[in-house]
Length: 264
Length: 49
Image 1 (tube, rainbow over the protein chains, first blue to last red):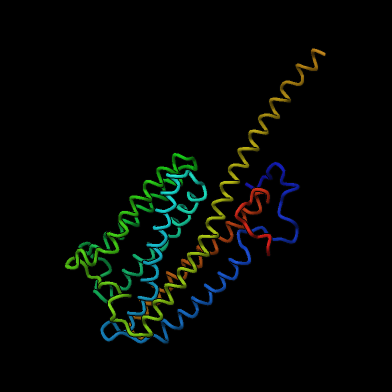
Image 2 (image 1 turned 30 degrees about the vertical axis):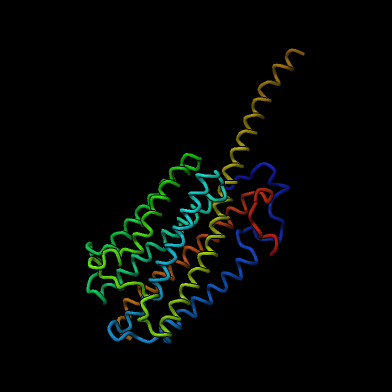
């Protein structure tokens, strides 16, 4: 698995520098995210007040809502990258779409999981198939799992195009998920937007917005690393192909030499 | 504190998943960066470290 590539002897990472996808900027961004998560735990568990009805179960809002918003952002980025791939055939945008989809699937799964866990003490059920937001979010999750499955089937342009179409189909579902609690308000256990309904106390609202900011910073950090990983995977495949072509050419050269030697 | 079990599972799952994914990304990046020649590492800014 770790066979060297052609030219590696003069191009490898210099001694003393650690090969990685990190940089000074991502280091400090990651440090800010880590501190932000610690601060969010302190705010969420010890500073924000409990709710009159939900009591301490309301503290689940500080991980559930940021995860949901990150899902929208990530799948929105996937849709943008997919459009740009279909329009410009830009590898850069294709990698953006793929990277955002992977992160989005994780946070969409977390949105479903934390929502179910929060639902048990609040609604007395983990899941309700009649709730339009739950079902549309599950459909979104499954579509994007399908996106990643398609991506895992190959790395050629045709596969990227198929995945881009799936990414755009998922994007159509985004406003449906977001607006479902208003369009079908009588078919959901969900409340309307926690951020805009004005029912949250000041410190609860501050902690929620703080959590959203920390999650967005994490998304930026993860996107940078995931993009670079995707780029390196692509370069590695390309390098292996170059090496294979060079090897075949060398073989062909060797095969032709004895015949030349015999005739001279 | 009420509902502590639900809170610990929900928060633990979220933060734990984030940490695990981050570790996976960093380790995968290190493995790949060691295998790909520096001349092909476009979009990397590791040299400024």
